[in-house]
Length: 277
Ligand code: PAF
Image 1 (tube, rainbow, N blue to C red):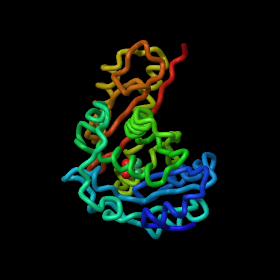
Image 2: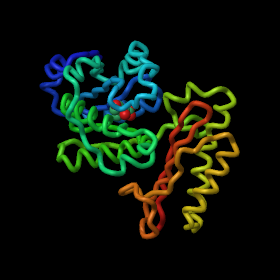
Image 3: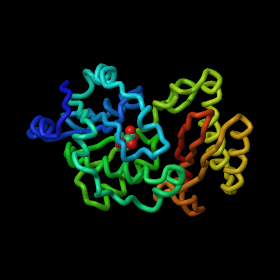
Image 4: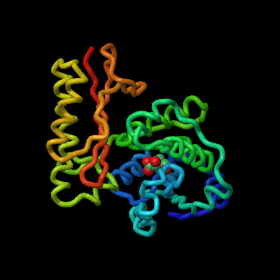
């Protein structure tokens, strides 16, 4: 496995590769990322993972400076799974001030975007830059960041990039908690409570599968249950999978999306619901 930090060196290394599968990350890798990298092997003969903490997608009061940078440990985990790790510096990615941005679709201002203005604009901009640098045939993203995956699919489709976007299922701990770099910030008590987010989504899913269609009421009750367990719910929403708009009764493919804080830790989760015809 080669670790490369400049765009010129990366382009030279990849110039003869015919089928590149790419996994962009911000490092601090856990089993969820490694699962994506393993899956990438099914989508290309050369697997590239990037590690770059992208300043453009952090707001002024967010944790950019405190975001864990664990390059050495990450590379050890990627050994034997990836062929190339691209780990550029901020100056390599942004040698001049970035004044050209991707304007994401309006859904970027809802859900996670409502409390993180500019986040998806910065995310989409760096993802497009990375796709242009690596020029993969396939790129893989986790479904845990469901809104991010939706926005990337829209960008790649509407801008006609010849890249297959693969969404991978969320990897969970034994009790169901979605794996996330942020889980390490949870206290022992919070870790015990954290799985309630997933359980609550599963309960809503069950209710919908049993015929409940009052989505507003389901959302409201779930927020109340979580609040009673000490959560501050940012949003909990039943949406269409296709466009992430509020669920319409005609749609058969829905997704339940939630973001909520336990203490200082903000956790995300979602589950898809497919209704029988
Ligand atoms: O999901 C992430 O880790 C980041 O948003 C991504 C896609 C690597 C862009 O910085």
